[in-house]
Amino acid sequence: MLEEIARKIEEINILYQFCMIFIIGLIPFLEAHVAVPVGVLLKLPLIPTALLGIVANIISVMLVIVFTNFAKTKLTKNNKTNVNGRFQKAQLYFNRYGVPGLSLMGPIVGANHISAFVSVAAGARKESVIVWQIISIILWGIGSGLLIYYGVDIYQWIKG
Image 1 (cartoon, rainbow, N blue to C red):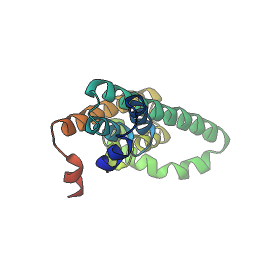
Image 2 (tube, one colour; image 1 turned 90 degrees about the vertical axis):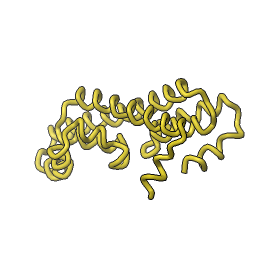
Image 3 (cartoon, rainbow, N blue to C red; image 1 turned 60 degrees about the horizontal axis):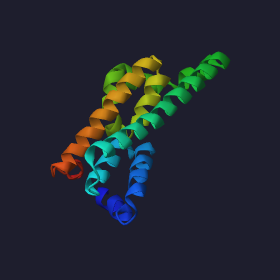
Image 4 (tube, one colour; image 1 turned 30 degrees about the horizontal axis):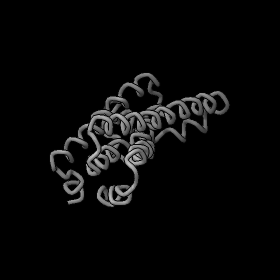
């Protein structure tokens, strides 16, 4: 997957390559843990690439947190019985793993966006979710970038 993405954008201008790293970082399910390795495969400088992918991922996850918090506040004011049913599954995951666990497992459960949504929907403090999401995004972005940089293809291990 990484090679395919890198192959599609390797022929464009370097400025546009950096823009693509930012865009990939914004996209749920791709995020920083894909954006940074793609930049490494394109032979872009690691630090600016990591910063772009991580910042983009943080921006998009923060939007999910703010929207979810707003929606939850509105829904709980208007109709408490519907909200309890909708957030019951989120509460189960939240109770099992907590904010740190859900945040750090973000890419494993699908996306940091999902773990942020579940945490806020289940009643976690928005500030706590923000802190743990930022920690998770930084760890996953830098970690996956460094693994690819040093020639370790973690994505093959996961498939394999």
